[in-house]
Length: 417
Image (cartoon, rainbow, N blue to C red; front, side, top):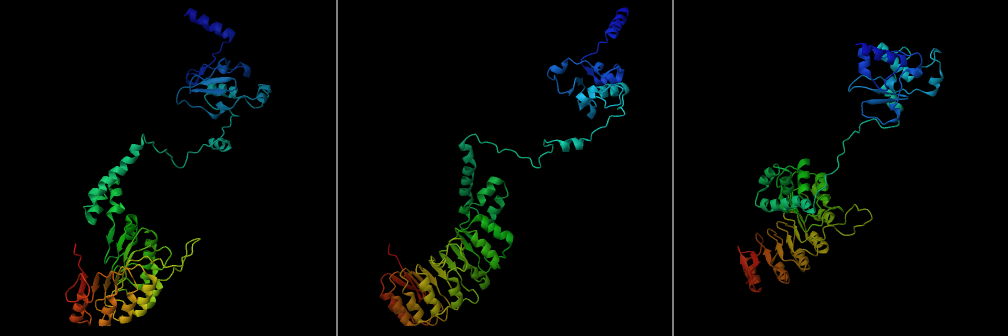
């Protein structure tokens, strides 16, 4: 005990102060006392060495070591300026940062002239960005090899071969299994032909068709608007066949557009008000144009198959077909009652015509058979429900090698091989 008292007297005589003070211990024990002058507050040797931990807070001329989660006031970060050091201790001037810390430790309360700066003001005056980003951006993970990159495609290609044996309803259920299966079910290889006969077309169904990119689209007797069909045709550039049998004329009229796909097969049978004027409208150059391009020819000039059954086409309409569609190989004019022998004579100008259906055309006679005899490429001729006699049909078949009559008025060329 006597040695301890002597040590305390020696420390008090030479006024030794530790270079670092634990703030929490100072609060508890009250070991720090106010000195007579600011220069004698805390001697600091450690100012020249780097910080030893994240719990060490730097100030001008002082280092305060605090415990984790201990309370630290904004005044601890105010450095002691040169002007504050020149002010006398009792002159009523601003108190230095070191004196503030010492006074607060001694009294356990903030001193009178200590004004806390709001944290929002400090952040607003800072030039650094103190705000969290609005969106979290994560880098795309790198694949190790190119083989890994091709693996999903291989899985999808394998699934496509299996899904070819499934129906459209089964494919719908398979698309709900996982992402790979969904990707495989929307492959255009599975949707070469899509039949939506007598279906009410909704915006959701239009998008469903667009995603699958069918090459053959059947919309017979569908309730589809002109806007829906126009939106769909723009997004089906690879389509080759389109059937609009029984659709209203207002919907069919959108085929006269620069964005219409280059179809090779078109079915416009039983379209209301389909006459020569309507046919002329469809087979004319488009009214709109693509930027920088001027379409002077009809977008349907590459048609090889055209069906106009049940329409009011006359001989004038037949001449329009012959002039605009020279590549036709199949033409269906069934139940087109206004057509006469003059219209049939015009059809002989199409050199590649192989299939001709004139069923129900009551305006033709035996003269039409003589004209059709000049068509060397003709292999299928339907003359049922016409006024032609069986004797004239048998005479036509006997004069042409390889032809045979079925059902009395259906003439078909039989391949001997």
